[in-house]
Length: 138
Image 1 (tube, rainbow, N blue to C red):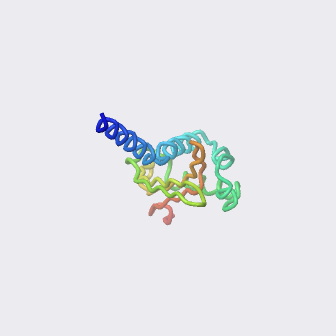
Image 2: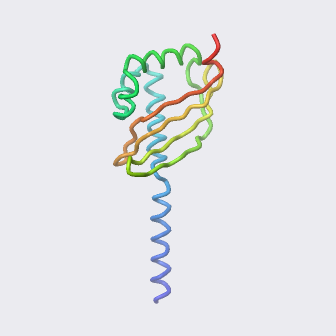
Image 3: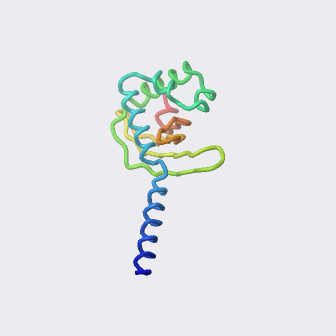
């Protein structure tokens, strides 16, 4: 009897640990999906409006819109991406998830990194970085 109780307690502990390990990656992936949908629909202002305060303090809406228009001009539309690698950080500054994708656009490839603040099950964009040789060529 005592052994069953201990085994049950261990299973609960493992299940709790596995639940904690997801760490917000699903919320971050949903954020990326929303980002991509908004870009495809031309709703870049909506991305900016729903981004974290840190993001909005780092760049103005006009700067962000010009940046995104430049990406579209140089890379074309997003086509697909491999499954992302991820990094989870938790600390006194909050809970952050970074997802890095090897993405294909209509004119070539790029590495994209999205950083999200996860708060109460909701992802808010903190950073978006993209790297491609197409961005430095004319």
